[in-house]
Image (tube, rainbow, N blue to C red):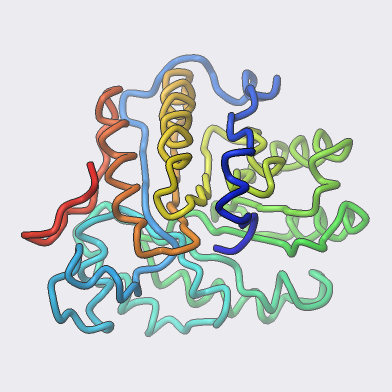
Length: 299
């Protein structure tokens, strides 16, 4: 992910600390931990050639990447659906790879809906998107809606109308990026999402600290963590997230979706292992990538 990227020599100047929880979070989380909350961790894509010989067996072909990916992670932030509408047949083939596993696909809304023109008048193309992803069946996780960096609060009425039209039997999270959403507009935005039972995406990236807003509009969270290719700053940032996730779970969080991004995705497995090991130390067990014999993570 390029969003929020800064030059490496600027990283040491950035305050990566997470802001305190907004007051509304106390009303969203009920204060008592669930016996069995769901923790889903993954990446943005499974098609990484750099992972062949690392977590995928040597000589693994691209068509078989997903078959191996589901052995290492229990979720994926599926960006492929942002660039193309997939039919039921293709989606069903992906779902089949996860058969028998507690694995969720979290498809990103098609860009033809969210990034090309107004949000209204997109009923047909939206329905085609939904028709395809329903083939995931029980492996369908929340749908991730992102509006463009230039989509400002001036289009608030358009956005709210669109969100109100979404199917009520599906789960959604929204990511906004325009800086004005995180100023005086934030209270109305997050209040509206709470009313509509739509989650708020939290994006933790170096160059846009405002997007790491910590707002919980439902007792679920969708975190897009953008690391910097195992830069020394990546590890204390993960430590801070482990502490915050533990706090939320102790107070009634039902579901956590944590997706590992890198500007160079080759090293995502290493940082995922670090995350898993840190979570294990506070009593939270998640799947973690298993490296091919002879290969080792850095931890």
